[in-house]
Amino acid sequence: MVYFRIPKTWELPESTVTNQSAFWNRRQVLKTLFGASLLPLIGCAQEDTEHPPQLAGAHIVDLSAARNPAFAQVDRPTTNRAVAASYNNFYEFGGTKSIWQNAQALPLENWKVEVTGLVNKPRTYDVDTLKREFPLEERIYRFRCVEAWSMVLPWIGFPMNALIQAVEPTAQAKYVQFMSYYDTKVTPGPLLTGLLRPLPWPYTEGLRIEEMANELAFFALGIYGQTLPKQHGAPIRAVLPWKYGFKGAKSIVKIEFTDQQPATYWNTLVPAEYDFEANVNPRQPHPRWSQATERFIGAQSQLTWERKETLLFNGYAEYVARLYA
Ligand code: MTE
Image (cartoon, rainbow, N blue to C red; front, side, top):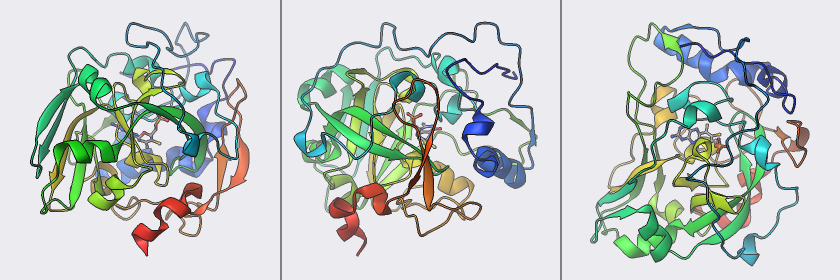
């Protein structure tokens, strides 16, 4: 299936928002590495393009949580909610930023998160149990994509360290892997043909245990005072504000503690471009573009951006620099 769309009045074409090299980066890489011929990703012909993104529905309910005063504000305005919910990366549902409609196919009923591997207390949680057992809080975090765009987002969730306390990783556990939902019947992936080898689904990401235990590391179940819209990775996703956005696996179904560094999606696909650590670093350019600045998407209800200097560890050095001394 080829998705054609006309930009909505309140957004700009993706190609004008993202600089050309970043816009094509991952698609180009997939083509180069996998011998894929790309189908057109932009165009026209979708009828109802004037609707704002899906911000209502049975799965989107209020999720109140007190704001953690330590993370109550940053030096930039919070990104407009509708813009954040219509400019997403969720490759399971396709390779464009306009993925919110496709992502509505994600089935959230009876969602389970299996916590397994090198832990004393393995456990499978449903979403209600997560909400009941882990006190929720709100945190305003900077968010920096490796493609050099950024946002400020108000997440609701709980620190990853609380899960560590609950399941008790063993002394052998050195890493953790997060695995996203994947079902070929529901998640078609990007529009590529002629792949020489399959894409490394399901989407996985990982951390060292010390990174997971850092106070910034967060599981989000909500955003903007409500449960997560599907395109943001409902019902639970990882949020790691000092790392590039691709580290934050969406729609997590499994969390596994291991003694070996786990395979991760983008690192498996293109190790030379997406390293396991993936800390935001303005001095370390991506092989094909600079990371010195970013295009910040702020409070405006139209998709607009402002050029900002990128900060080391995305501005969170005081919390995490010691992990990388
Ligand atoms: N998680 C899954 N499962 N699939 C994805 O394609 N994309 C990542 C990350 N998590 C991705 C994912 C990337 S590249 C980014 S920048 C963020 O999600 C985007 O999050 P957002 O769409 O909520 O802003």
